Image (cartoon, rainbow, N blue to C red; front, side):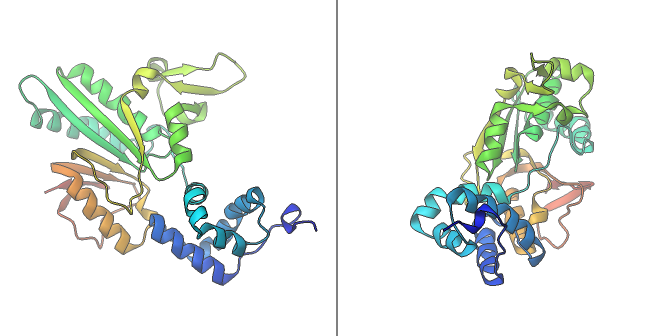
Length: 284
């Protein structure tokens, strides 16, 4: 018997889609409305082919099993999450960080001649955001004597975290990076036919990466001065966004900043913050 997967793309039943979409929302908070059915079918089809299942029903049955929860949950999350980013994306945020947040926080956190800043890139994807933060904070440290910083990047996808750890990118990803910074912070491939760059080790070493599911307890030992969570909450429904923002606020130091994506806001969300600029909020 020849498997259907060899020749054709299968169609997911409404019942199976509803079951799987509820599961995805419960596990990682991502909403899956009916409009996402075709997208979900396309992405899950790749797992059916790899695992040798004839139907989505077989796949879901396996996913919900004890073995499936151990072996398939992470690969499934990897393929349903969307990861679009680049260095200095929405660069206004980094200008605001440099001009207002860093000088303010450096003075506020000063102890003697030393000052320390902690930043969390929540939903860091393939690493462009935390490495951009590393560039900005490194340059500020060169001008502000005694300034030091830590950067944590987290994501629910193990696949994107592996890419972030390597720090290797298509050259198009640094199109917003000027030539001076390119030379200072990136290494070109020795093969002229490969249009790729790698983040220099000294920059990568300033970023700690770890897996995190927003739906679980954060369990951080320390709080943060700045949290970047950009273009992530657009995938969540309002109750999930409310819970997530409340958790972020608890992880911020007094007067800390929360940066959202340019198309995101805290409209309809109850949080002890004030809006200080477009998609930028400060904890009261």
